[in-house]
Length: 392
Image 1 (tube, rainbow, N blue to C red):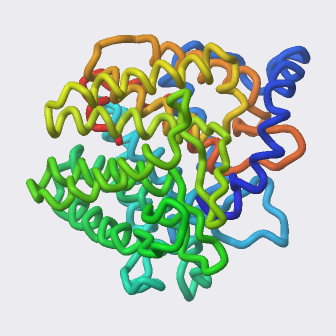
Image 2 (cartoon, helix red, strand yellow; image 1 turned 90 degrees about the horizontal axis):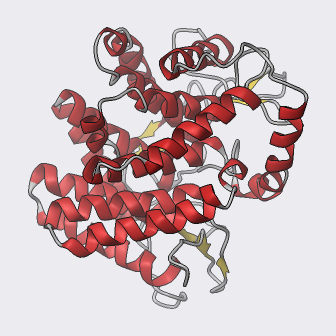
Image 3 (spheres, rainbow, N blue to C red; image 1 turned 90 degrees about the vertical axis):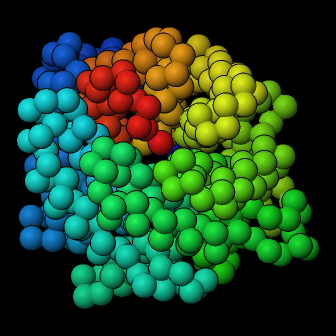
């Protein structure tokens, strides 16, 4: 997650006010069109608004980051929001039947645009997606490992969907970048871990830079049979469990170079370990992993959903959280988590949808990443349950 849009620096202030704002907005009534009650209609409406308000429409396939745009804005979105718009189109294209097929051209276009962030080298010498589009459209900027992991997981999802070799090749290239991000500094507290970014002034090692990497590794092992992917996945998995899992079973955000831990509970940091354990169960048939997935899911559901905290979380974090819970329910056949996901989607539609059809929070402009997250949530709720097994 890059420093622009939904960043750790802005989220700490934003989250505290979301629940109160939801209540206040509900009290003054719904904005925009009413609740259709049909999640397919809502997925299509969220997406139509995203394209109408954020698509740059200059032939690049790229999006702007904010609406309404201002003169000071850069022309194109940073990588993290763009990747979530990319994934939104992938999720739409995977809706069964004619609805999904109609999104095939748009998916091809956004996949081509994704390459505009791809640099042939980085500070570790490995290729990867930079935070901003490369010249001549932009200036590239820094590299964030979690940004690349979301694209890598999308490439794997696309490969499972279409069985195309290009997606698998892309995912393997991204995993080589992730491998290069493993910290080898033995003087740091809790040595090891994949760094959050290649920026020289930030040595944080995060749940979100390690657990998605582990998810990628398990998927690649199952797809290729190459044991080294599983070995690395377990290395990332065990480091995160040993370093960032809290006594209550939930996951803290990151470990700083001075040894202090940011203990805040973000929803995506809980969802990815759930999905990771489901995949480890599939890969190894070791029952401990499925049991662990259930425990983390139960603990996070109690904290976030039953505890009425899920609406305090940014929409892209919740999209990742809930999709990993659907992966679990593809194994268990339960419906508690999909019901919680539907409830969240209903509230966002009623309370957070502005007159342009976008997600909007008080005091700031609409952001690409928030509406993209709602497209993802509504789209995967239209999938067949068995297809949830293809998620992260």
